[in-house]
Image 1 (cartoon, rainbow, N blue to C red):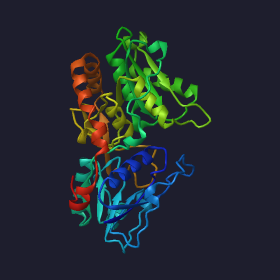
Image 2: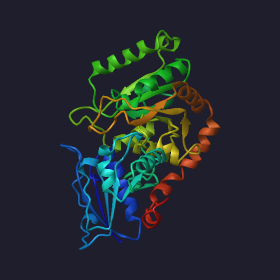
Image 3: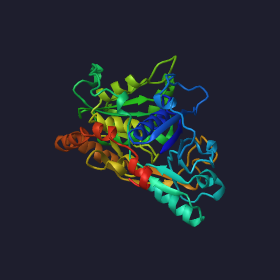
Image 4: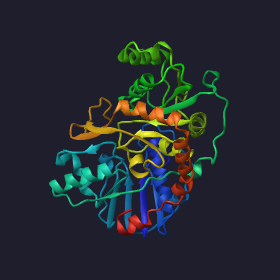
Length: 376
């Protein structure tokens, strides 16, 4: 088959990471792949090099795959099979039909989440929409990631401590950094040889960081662990770019022992897959698609529940509506799991052994069966 892939695979962000990984998996098939880049940012940080798939030309295409925002979706009638990958972060539950116009245009929707798949299928059945929904496997573009990250010297304050770390937007409710802090302070004190390191996705003024931690402490109250100053360290990229490079991100994994990612999103972050591949045994919500497709063998799953999504950072008018659900973490479960991760070396080693196979697993993913049969 001749397949045309359209996506933001040149961007150096989460959209780009996921798009490149899927393009790589498509190139592992026996089909002819043509790709065309798009940009989902006004000022994207992107790779200017030409990929070999961009030089592939065909007079006709059998499949077009669009990894794109719904408003930009186009149905190409001359191509027999139109597939949309819309990177859902919430579970659609009760959306009106006018918010599903992009989905109705497609012949097929690809999603990594079984929850999203079930939500869409229920909606489509209710509204007599014939679009097929297919769950796709998680993949990671391992070609751009070194086999072993560099081992860097740690901050002296963190020496000899077990380091929990997160890579998130500290000020964004969706990434739930406040909940991570609440679990951490309710679980550990200065006497525990642990530390929490937060790598901010963007540069934040020092005063805003101080205000954030003050808000966290005031929300928790007068806990002994706070009085004892359980170690917490916030690291962020510096101007002028204010963002992390790929090498920066790899170095973050090298400095930590266990990653925490409890974003309200149901989508798997590429940083979580990287952390698992580097044997950092990530702690994630049990309703996240990373846990959905990797499971307890590779990850620590914490209790979470579907809740109404209320979010001030709505990027589009049809995203994050009252008709969508997202993950909410059980903070007690997070604290208990962090404690287990810290003290249970045997279980950590089991997960790390399983994770040592992930590089090969991610590298060998292809969509041959999905393209031919529409299933994993």
